[in-house]
Length: 347
Image (cartoon, rainbow, N blue to C red):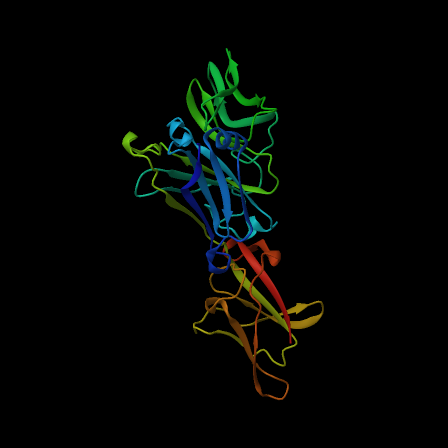
């Protein structure tokens, strides 16, 4: 009698410093088209958890179909976010908002059994950005030359498109990829990879995870298909950091300008009040002296209060709101282009 049991292959722990407890709360993870087919073929299943996902594999009478998977195979997973402000509060490789492709992390567990490569995207669209499986034009800064150009799947090594017998140098290529499954691909000139890119049909996609059983630094004896009857499960963690911004408080209705912003932990975090006019009313502006992290909820580190004297001269204190991605914009400041979060407070 055949019996089917399920065993844990790995845990994908998705973290984000913007959210409470560092748990990426609105993350959605799905296998790519090619990986979904592999799951069917090799008896695997993706189980979503509160902090990410788990990958399970089945064994039939002690025999795991997963063990016959080719050593060079990689498993691809698409990450999406349900919030439209993901790119506003998520830190990318550079400080600016104009990043194209961000290589976030590569992790290999101590057992060496599974490596994780994660890529995240930011507007505007460009090299490496998620695009629909369709024909598109790829441009290059300098002229290129190759006798043969190919698009090769990273997970299966299959050539999905090829342009042979190119006669002249070129600065752009028309890639004909209509109907090609979503996933990670490499563009190759005469068998040399010139760039990796991702084809995605998933709405709100923000990143792509590739799990590679046979990573470059993993000896053949330590690949996912290990000796023995069981595969040692492991946890792979991906941690995104929140963006930082200059926090600006614009306060109107103060009896006088002798006001300060204080924190629970003390410290001189904000500038002295600067007078200005807001819709014809007198107001003051406070700017943080350094960029502060954007967070979904308040912590002790960013609990700010406004202290002032009321109309009767009595000392008063009110709690201030924290910065929000909805009110965060790239602005020109004295230090150049910076993210600025503006909060309006009326006394």
